[in-house]
Image (cartoon, rainbow, N blue to C red; front, side, top):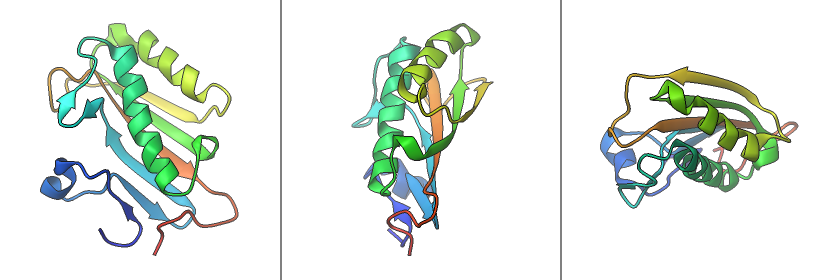
Length: 135
């Protein structure tokens, strides 16, 4: 993996040519994460639990970059079903309620797998310094 890139080891990163996260100076940009573990979609039919799992994956990349939950400044939520916005928002609030990052929620027509109900993105910022992994 090139400097400043963090991998989750998942097969899609190599196949599609992207990194789980990119570190650029004090910025950590995490690619979209779904509730997919070991190639299997988790918590089928449960947007709340899928959101918690997707953020767990995203925050693992944030931590690998040497930043933390407290450094998260923006999140994005891509939700398939409008009826799930409350469940997804509740999960977001449980994780980020104290941090309160900027957040955008968007309804989308679908994701890569029909069992996926939500995809999340995270951006973190380390004020006054560089995050780890920046070459």
